[in-house]
Every structure is written in C-alpha cells, then in structure tokens.
Image (cartoon, rainbow, N blue to C red; front, top):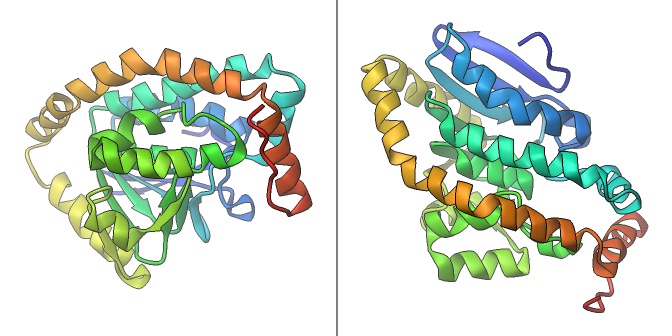
Length: 262
C-alpha cells in the first residue's frame, strides 16, 4: 500500500478504510489516481490483514469524476485514451472481482467515474447532502467506463436511460428511494453508520460472506466482460467529437456549451 500517491489507507482491526486523497481537486480522477484505481482492488483483495474494505473520499467530495486537464490532454493526443481505456476496464472488473465486501462511504458528491466506482461497490451509504450522477453526456462523452453497465442493474433500464442520457444529478435521498444506493443518512451520522455495518460484516463468517458476494457478482462480472470493450470504444470515439471539445472549452470559460451534434 506504500506505492500509492493519491490514495490513503487506514486500518481499524480487520477493516481497511481506503480514501481517495486529493481533496483540493474534489478527488477528480486525473492520470495518477486513474492508474492507482486500476490496481487498487487487486491489492485490497490480496491484502492479508483485512476482511472488509470501506471506500471514501477526503474533504467535501467522494469524487468529482474526470479531471478537465486530463480530458483536454486526451483530445490533443487521442493515443493517451488507450491507456485510460485499459485502466478503466481493469478498474471495473477488479472491483467486481474483489473477494472482500467493499462498502462505499459517499461523503460528498459522486459524479461520472466517481459515481460508477461507488455504485459498483457492494453496499453504498451516502450523506444525504451528497449528489450522485453520471454527466458524461454533459461533456460530450459516452458513459462508457462502467456507468452504462451498472446503472440499469440497480434501477432498471427506464430510469437508467433517463439519468444517463441527460447527465442529471440526483440527491442521495432520491438515490436511496429508487434503489440506486442502500441508504442516505445525515452527514454527521455517516461515519458511525458505516462503522457499525462494517463491524457487523467483520464479525461474521468471513468465507461465507466473501463467497456469497462472489456468487452475487457472477452475472455482473459476465455483463461487464461482455460490455466494457464496446462501451469504452464508443467513449473513445466520442473523445474525438467537436461536441466534446466544445464542452471542455465551455467549462474552462464557465459558460453553457453550444452543442452541434458533431
């Protein structure tokens, strides 16, 4: 765990708390964090000193999704997307394949890839002040890094289409109501609620819990395997569009984008 620059680790007995640790950037996923997330869950799965993983973010946000500078860099040099695509697939599959239960403690907003990571976790608790959404289309990109895989499985295709095609965010309270996450609780209660749940799992029959998780995830892993290559390829194509460049430029200039469908 000492090889990570952007992720911090804290142990509480057999519970390993993993913190996305770039609060000044709202834990937006730049190149370094993206690479570290692609190997994080393999390392967590192999860690001999933990049975439960709690994933959270430092500061005000869980993760604000993609880093704008990195997005512009991939527009300027599309070959950079090859590494990002490979890492994105590794991230999704290794999270689904991690034998240990992974609990998302969504302390603040979780958007884009940040939302995908949270929703791929086994149990998701969020502060009721947090907002969750996948605004890939809002920046002219396909929701190809796992959002199109996991959202329909949690809330059904009709609702998933509504949110993935608009990029709209929702409150954690609404997310809990429609089944996207498990529970939304007051921010000041979040740490304690997650601690109690993690300790309940940690005190249970470890192997039975692990293997039940793996059994539940079989269809999700099969679905991700069947979808990720195509969905990431579509996202790579959208990286080349004029609309994506317009969205990034508009964000930099703090104005609404003017999409042309090109």
